[in-house]
Image 1 (cartoon, one colour):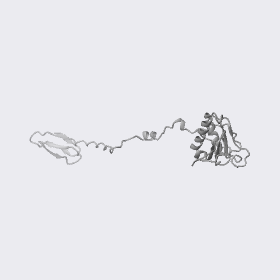
Image 2 (cartoon, rainbow, N blue to C red):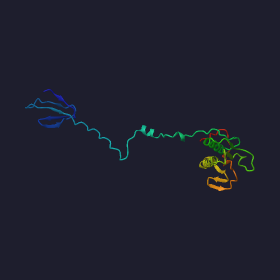
Image 3 (tube, rainbow, N blue to C red):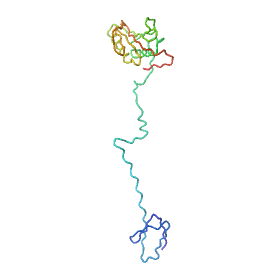
Image 4 (spheres, rainbow, N blue to C red):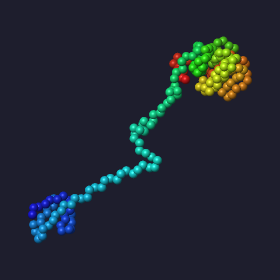
Length: 209
């Protein structure tokens, strides 16, 4: 019988019994056997596949880096995007930056206002130093005029921090961010707004809505 060479990982089976081969390159011969011998080569069992990864903990999900990166984007409504304020109806010469901001914001919010006074001679320093503006009210004694003046005062108070507002005066009432009080002394035809100034412009300022 011809010799048979088998790898060491195979088993030699004879007459229902099995024994591992002696080693790599072992030669098997059946020349001296009295009975016919059935030879089977049995391969080693295949390796088991790796188990699947455990499921994520409860409440967690697997998200790709791309999705996580995209989730950082935030949609901002157009109304919330800062935009520069155009020059309003006030003469800005000599005004300080917070006073300019207040004047431009009032012009943008109330297009019916056609005149805003700024720097002028006065016994008090507010107007000469560029700290105050006078928002002239059309038909100031009418119901519409009074309502317009009231709206401008409320607008200024809502933006008190932004404008660095010190006070507003309208129809005999002195308004501050802390609350109104008497002692406004007139001001029946215009709303007087005083700011803390913020310094004089240098030319590179951008005033935002």
